[in-house]
Image (cartoon, rainbow, N blue to C red; front, side, top):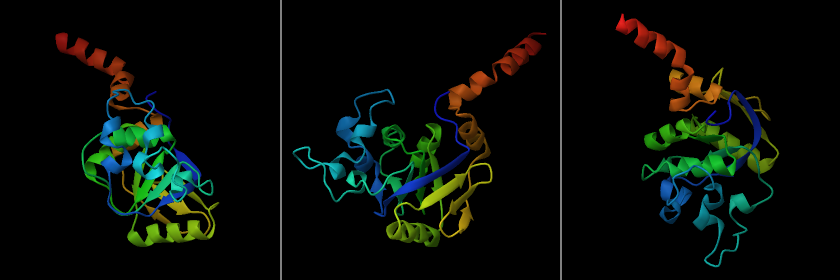
Amino acid sequence: MAYDKFNILNSTVVPLPTENVDTDQIIPARFLKATERKGFGESLFMDWRYDSEGNPKSDFVLNDPTYSGKILVAGKNFGSGSSREHAAWAIYDYGFRCVVSSFFADIFKNNALNVGILPVTVSPEFLEEIFTEVEKDPSTKVEVNIEKQTITLLSTGSFESFDINTYKKGNMQNGFDDIDYLLNMKDEIVAFEAAKKI
């Protein structure tokens, strides 16, 4: 499999209410030399996480032990800027499996789906409710159900539905990237080719 199967994710969240987070902030350009997906997590939000001497900035959320989990909850317009796939790679490699926002840049959204990160678009009101609940209690959990296409704030029971392309949904549930999807259809492809030769 290209990545972990995604069906139901029940997790605490890491809140990043900053708006207009672009891909250069997610993974600075100087870290784009590698072509494999591994090892980018350590450079995620590098310039926000560390000072010029390489010391962790205590006021940045990824350096705050209060918050943890597999869900990153971000402000509006997450993933804007360049089309670099490395931004999605870094988020996945760090350990996040879902990013929640009220708006995603289209290219980032597709890149995320291609590597096993579920981008969940919610209303601004629901996003604010999540931030409020997590601020009150960092142990607050969110459940993301890809089959039902729902995201639920477990502390209040409130939920919203989200959209996802049917093809990408199936791939997420099976842990397939595009190549895995085709390989899974190998027998059908071989049969189709054989029939065409008759």
